Length: 117
Image (cartoon, rainbow, N blue to C red; front, side, top):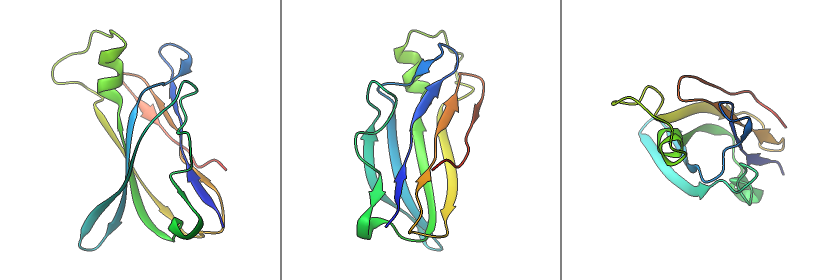
């Protein structure tokens, strides 16, 4: 079986985003269901896969990163309201036997992602 993982890269400081709160939701036609809460470690990664084994199912998901809270905790002078606050990455898993790595590359002013393995 495959697995789902993530990590956060803080491009303003050129380092991993440690201590970022992450929530994983399953999304379907009737709404979304919280599957897991995690916090990134010193390497900007979650200590365990967000999904693995029987949890890893094809479907639609959202990862929600508390990026604004992370930057505020780093002492970054942010406007109110924050330009980048909660970052929601909506994505799909088509083949649950593969690995899906969904990283967040973020600053207070922009973010991006890609599918890694």
